[in-house]
Image (cartoon, rainbow, N blue to C red; front, side, top):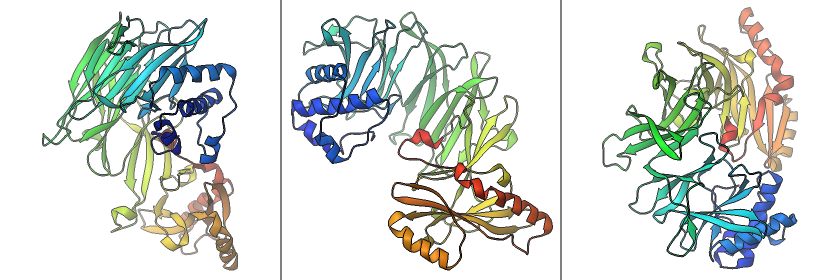
Length: 489
């Protein structure tokens, strides 16, 4: 589902002011929530009212009544639930509430909470920020472990208004706004550019980490960034740490909190330095403060990547791995646009070194995420096949010490409509191939060379042959990724 509903045809229906249209859209959204999956509809699907349980239909009617005329459901830029309607127990009483995000009649983002009562669903409170034009981040988290959720909202300021992060407690008393609706007032408002919640201190509780940036609009030659850590206790935010961050990034784009080694909790920051390049920082929580782990000049680790990175837990061990990128060796004078990048996922050992966890080839155009077989580690490189061949990457055997490079296999993505002609041509030229997958109108194939190159020395032939043995199970290394960026990890 798209981050915005503005570009979908359903939007024009909702914008028209038809209450029936809003009800239909709410039914669609609730059908998705009830099923626990995302909904990607063809236009014809939206013309029929979906089958839905009676209780969900009652909630949809309550949402229709609660939202102003000409409203439009929306999804924040970052939101764990990825839905406009979130059903969860906010106060630990075993009864779910509904948290709904939408644009009001003036295209200003708002949040409404509905509760279940003996008389059915009823509007509880409104969360609003009149100076906002969008919601960058929404987080529902039990900050202090008392079984009750707090709400954090990162509002994007309209016109000259700055971005602001506001924390709301459902324990605070709501007050009437100028329209007579009960609205929650924020417990605290903070300037921010990035924020995240997680167990940074290793105490089992959720801390709030906020980055505030100055000069990102070009008024300063080099922006300055500041990081603050807050704990939530006794219905108040308490600042635990405040520090300045290294200069060099235009803006921080990602902030991750969690385990950074088997023994340490910490955080990872990724910030852009140019059109494509990024800097990555890893900090570990030690002695009531944050210690910079990466970059590490002593180890020759600069933290710079010529490509965007998305560090994260790649192997499911709950430890954040860093994504390191480098241009494939063995190909000189290749333009940036034609370069193919190797992706290494590295884990800090908690002492003085990083260890390789996995390697991947990633192609965002065709949604290809390919795990590099262990048999290839240290003995492969990658190049760009001829454009007319439908090939997206050629894997070569590579012996850097001897300067040896020999083609091993090529990965192809062929449109289904063209596959019949391509297949006939390949059979005529006796090209070996294996079909790996069929997805989104494309056929994904791999073609390994038939024989080990005779000109390779015997020792290199053995390595080449061992690398070729993965051909039969090559499909198990491939995953086709669609629109969710989290799937790239």
